[in-house]
Amino acid sequence: MQQIKIFMSVESEVSQTEAEVNAWLKESGVRVLQIFGNIAPQTTPLGDTPGGSSGPLRFPPSDVILVVLYETP
Image (cartoon, rainbow, N blue to C red; front, side, top):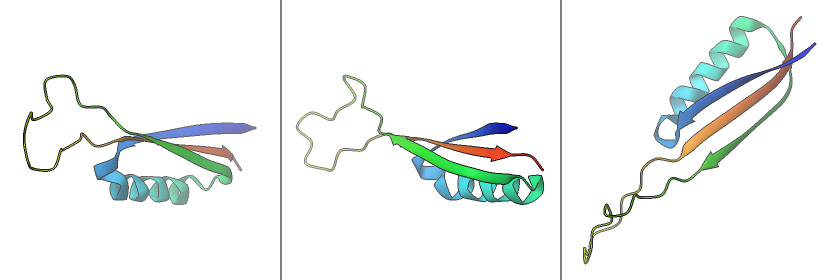
């Protein structure tokens, strides 16, 4: 039977999410059929943009989603 597992994170924590996914794969012993994901940039709320600032704009980290399609042994 095919099942999915969804991992959600933010861009600044990608290495931790990678470790979490790899640990889950090792512990679960599932047969992976497909892994896919998406990164969704976040927008700065109105009023948070520094007006007239000469420095670089800072954006909140993007949301990251990773979906694992798998079969159990």
